[in-house]
Image 1 (cartoon, helix red, strand yellow):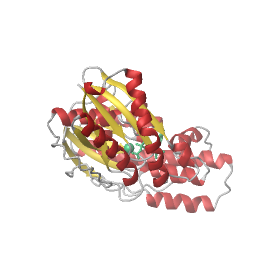
Image 2 (tube, protein in one colour; image 1 turned 30 degrees about the vertical axis):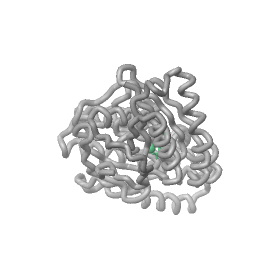
Image 3 (tube, rainbow, N blue to C red; image 1 turned 180 degrees about the vertical axis):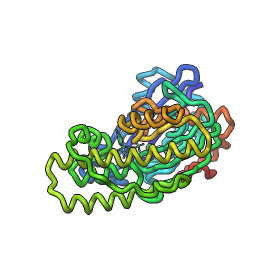
Image 4 (cartoon, helix red, strand yellow; image 1 turned 135 degrees about the vertical axis):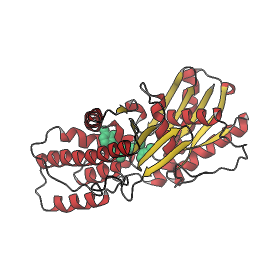
Length: 337
Ligand code: KG4
Ligand code: ZN
């Protein structure tokens, strides 16, 4: 069975084909990050304009590259939320139009669920139940994944996400958006470490995240310093250390509290190598197994949307198509559409 996946939640246009026997057949991404880096973050109307410029070209490209006929595609899955409304609507419109023209079911997919299930199309995948930390530019969420379609949120982000904190501090020290991986590169040249606060980490049973206090602390800290290249290296190192410490502490505490010995970390920030190394070390001490998506599946992509579409299809979680184009910009993982 082949499922077409369409992802347009933010500034990446993603188109993918997933085959349940062969895995990901193709996974094309057009990233607009170069365009938005000038502005220090994603500008919604520019993002939607670029999605509409690229989306049909990308669909034509995957059809040409794979020689797969549209009639072989079983269903069309698209990101229906959460995300930027003006970006979501492009993918939703194209998906619904194709679905109407070719008489295929159209499956709205929750982007967060897509990230959670990205681990299932990666080389090493966990058995249920497992703890999933979703850490991206938009979210920092801790969930227990009991099964497909069965998630329990145990922690959420109260303000800025981990990725957003990397991006905003990166912007202040002139690192282009998205800054996460650039901060990592700078961190390698550190000479000094600064100690930064780690908000809401004292209570072992509180799995919520808050990064805005850390961000404000660092902004004020920078104002008092001479910002030269070495300072930027040291700051990058200290920021990466602080954010990864918080993510690891909360995730390990969650695994211990719920007595679950498997942790999966997904989303853009899960591409961070230091996070992976430190987490592996901490997990080993606690006899916990760790799982991460292939690097290409950490940031936004359509393969995870196509795969989630496949899961919805086989678990019969799809409704009859009424061709009402629905999106939900702040769709929570455990809410019904
Ligand atoms: O999952 P994603 O592509 O988009 C959302 O759903 O939000 O995540 C993008 C985020 C950005 O904030 C980016 O800075 C961060 O992931 N990121 C990283 C790394 N690669 C991407 N953060 C830390 N280290 C990385 N290597
Ligand atoms: Zn995402």
